[in-house]
Image 1 (cartoon, rainbow, N blue to C red):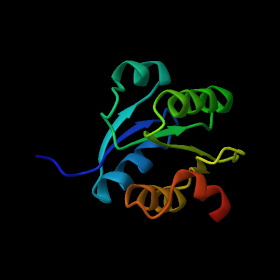
Image 2: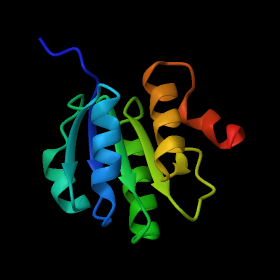
Image 3: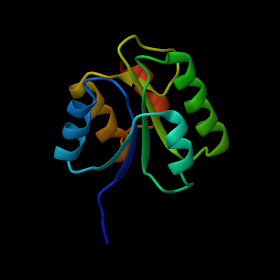
Length: 120
């Protein structure tokens, strides 16, 4: 049985491989997808420990997607990464060190996504 935390990473940015590799090197099982539409069909309740949505190109669509997840599956952990920031409690920076810190914190149970905004 695989004990690695499972992360669905929705990211179509040119530098996405940097985030994918950094998460894998940290010991996470990463399942990348390019489009939110594709992720909707792959995302089953309880299928992933964490869903990360890179919002750099589609901020409004990413916020809506994350809000839908939070409303429909309140126990699902979700982070939205972006360069420009957001007022959502689940928003984190997309730079690799900040993203890794947020992911580690959320998956290790030290911080709930709502606490990340106050830590930023």
